Image 1: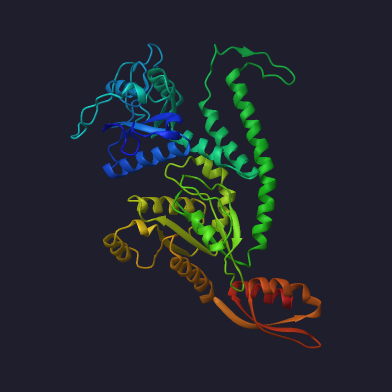
Image 2: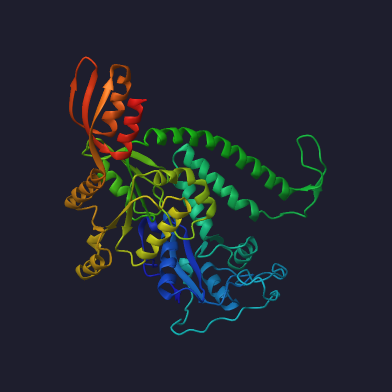
Length: 474
């Protein structure tokens, strides 16, 4: 399968012409279905667009595994170079003897060797990219070794970005708060450190105060600087996380909802609708990296807090998951998880599984959850009926429908109300400082004062009421 992608053609005009053009390179391995492969390529194209690129074509190949030197075979490498104007060849001596990255127990691959391709029907003939749509960037739907990136760049004459580096660059661009920027920098440095290579002859320097260690090469010095910078960032971040932890602790007794889901599923749109707040919304991947917490509107009594979280994506770099762990703790501490899913995306089931897997890694999968099948206005009536049969407990909604907004609001309130208990509390004059917390976490039904203090009948979460009762009686 080759040639220009369906949604990006040479006919596009206007501002898109000024965007750097990109060609997507993908290898369909033996255990990947045609549907999953197509979905992954489309997602990479969307990531490229979010990064400001204009995908103009694809080069794909079915193989048993990635070629150790060039990812694809010689023929496909030349085809890729036709899109970029490169030579399609790796200079002699650039390929070093190494093992296949997906099969380390197999014999080493020598320079010039190719892995056997898997024959398949329907690949079609390749006509070559016209000169006016030359690509300057190659997006690869895999994580690559530094040598593979270098070899592809030599063969194509274009910048090569693997999947993780594309995601990291998007995170860098979208990080707005100081906390998010530090988290992204830690992830970027963690990704960069093992990929540093010697640029010169590998000369070693003498040691000295404030200088390089004895026998330390330039690349070793760079790695040490990266380690020091990561340690510095983590120290700064820990101070911010402590403050965030204190804020979360204050909300322990309150009713909280966390919006979770795949990137661009519509979480921020629902955050804005449910809270009547100004939340950044854009039709692009990873538009939101910072956690926002606002009250549900109209406000029930006691109020319910809603938090938006960073979206998930398959093959999310582990460094990013680790760096954003503190941000995602909003989901772990929530009383209800609202899973937002783009029901119009054919791959939404796999996306839902990715979300659940990441939440499990964060020990946040035990909280009660509610499934929102979003964007059903883009789903046919027949498919909607099938979705109702498959997900009978889900809410099928569209952010454009006001009635659906009322349904979601009511469902959230009802969820917390069903676990509420009604009881009478006595607040002595010596405990009047607890009146505020009582009003925050419970709905006051009736109250009366006498010479001993305040007698108040409330309805609220059983756990919060029990903790307040213990504080009043201590």
